[in-house]
Image (cartoon, rainbow, N blue to C red; front, top):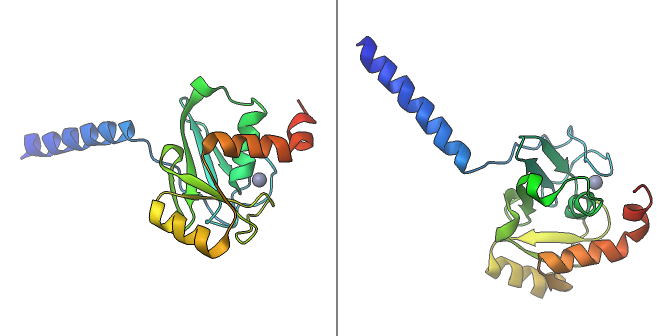
Length: 158
Ligand SMILES: [Zn+2]
């Protein structure tokens, strides 16, 4: 019996290890956690973002624009990053950056005013675009957009 228990624990341990291969975001405590860039409380699950480094350090953001600005300030090097997540607007779940496209729309106001939202599902993105208008962007475009709009904010303290 003892051996069986040990075996079960060992298996559990192995399973835990293999789960770390598929990185998961640390849950954001909405209304409590603060944004690593602007220091405001992360309140809206539709626009949040998170960065995890290879060392396991977690940075949470109240908006996608803050996450982009944080990266643009070169506070973190690309090779230090383990994963980046953004909120999928319709489901409010954190999904990998690689899986989304962005909508920048006046009709979808984000907490920090650049109105960037992310969509993991193409159909939902199209629907939001039909409904709210604006511009569909890829990651590079979003980075350039934040760089342009927040020049002062990003450049000022570097
Ligand atoms: Zn922020």
